[in-house]
Amino acid sequence: MKILLIDVGNSNIVIGLFEDGTKLFQDRTETGRNWDSLCFMNELETIFFSHSISGNAVDGAIISSVVPDLNPILSTAIRHFTGHNPMIADRSHIDIPVRDYDIDRLGMDRMVDMIAAREKYGAPLIIYDLGTCTTMSTLDAEGYFNGGMISPGVQLGLDAEAQKTAQLPELMADSPKALLGNDTVSCMINGSVIGTAAMIDGIHERVAEEMNLDIEKLPLVLTGGLGRLVLPWMKHPACFEPDLLLNGLEILYRKNVPMTSSEAVLP
Image (cartoon, rainbow, N blue to C red):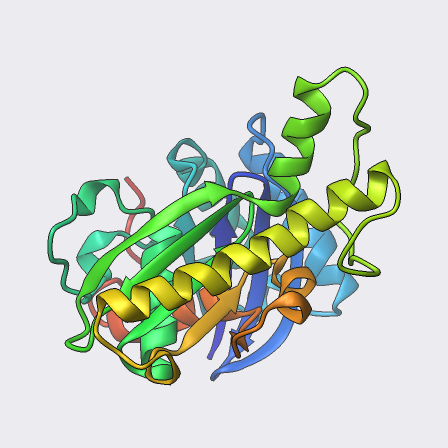
């Protein structure tokens, strides 16, 4: 069964096609707030054509989104392109219990990450998703979501420095060459990338202490497009899972497809 997986983030839309747990392709496009259904359908056609796959080959689809206004637009495009109405992942599909947290304020991307990480690593664990923002989520030993953190992402920090100062340049996040920078550009890159690595290491230690666990017994999972830059500068071992959210979406689809028929009528 080929499942189209759509992850709508604040900066990018990740588009993946999985078949029985195996990724056939993954692509991405910018999250355009002015998308209409025809534009997104054309984008899907272009991406599928580049991978020599027809939209008719898709057996079902699922969307996870932190930009809810785009959901009906993308759903219409997917229906016309594949012939199937996508499942919209929501909190009713998530079987992760929550302790002291307002579940209505918990982002769908974080919940889907937790589903995938728990499936592979069990609990307890910490998940860091390095995207536009750097989000941290924890599961305790009983599998409960135990809270987390949200901080500026690696690229977002660089963007803010350029926008809020008179002389610092606009930069794209990159791999540091050494611990200490020797010019303005390398100082900014190092501060954002290595600073994030040090933050993750330090918080990992503090959370393990708060949960009364040896740090070796608290797995650390990294995901998100910027994780590859941060991982080499971390002191504590971490498991890098670049496809974590897509894996979680496939898990959700497989668990819920009997009650969410791809032939259901869109609202």
